[in-house]
Length: 513
Image (cartoon, rainbow, N blue to C red; front, side, top):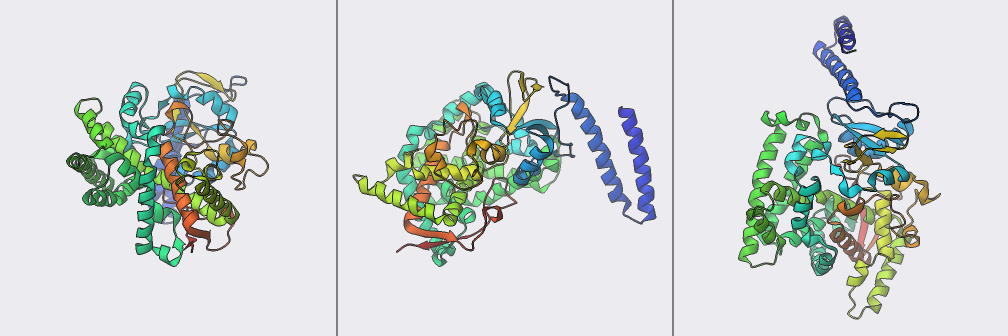
């Protein structure tokens, strides 16, 4: 078979060169395209043999997207074009199919019953090495708590999760309120908020980031905060290199004099120096800050420097995009659905009226409110990523009629589950927060993807919920939101350069009298 492919490839190459000469096309470009096509076909045959999956009844192969050199469908097709590809791939390949992230197979799940069969033991799953995104991502996040497994995960999480427990998150409400008020004043002074305009993603993106930074490092000294802000664009550019793929997937690319490698080296040096500075400032100021405990664990050999730095990066920079995606789409929905914003404002006013001190701390933690329902409905209709982080089953199993060996990586199609899923009813494409008042998240398990399933859910989810809800309360109480122009939901702009789903638009945000 391999000999046949090689001979056919040589024949195609000769014909292509003759055509290129005949029509005076650049031979180099033509040859490069043909070499790429031959390489792609050869690898595709190899991968099909290396990762065979067949139906248990008729032995038919699992529907699989064709391999594309060198990235497969990751990460651009999965994330940057994920929303449109989600529906197109399901329509073309069915309810369960396979894509490639580099040369790593990932099986896509779109049905709740398949997801339950795979994720019923999610606490035992193995996260894909470097998220199947290759070398560069591994250098940024490969040893973070979200991408390691088994004993290493338990060890790292036991140290790093303490500030993010459910009980701890309630103590951060005063911090969130203070930071939110300061930040909106900064926006008023430096951005378009004073003119009644707000870019939900770009204007607000540092607010959740700074809240989490203060949770980790304690009250930020001016020089610490300034350096943290300066590092953000540098880290954002590195993630763009990751999503772009290509050379950065391969470990040998570290020897090349590329822009990505220069930026990586500079960031790693500054990130270590920053955390040492933040730790030193916390000790000098006698703060009760988690960063002191983290460094103590590192010095005691309980956690490595790389595990520490990667998890801190995950908490801050990796989750910067994630949290602001959650915040910003909520703002857009409230601007578009002013009747819901009015109801939400009335709910906040009622809560203040019945509160002894006029505060709404307990309300921010209540999962049975319209506020909580708005956050969940926004997350349902605008998932932060089209496909979840790949994770492997520890034992073989049959799913959707196909037999998968232990170690198979699966991902969840969040658009298929959250939106196209018939569970959500005839009006599942519409923004209706009340649907979450009529059903609990427990009832919606395996029908709704947000933080994952089981013990390996995002450890920052409690703090993230407090931050998002507090920002929305601040907005609906202090500002009137509306769209700049009426637009159907399908027409809302999305930032196509960021792997996480962010709106790319402004809304009217006028201070209330």
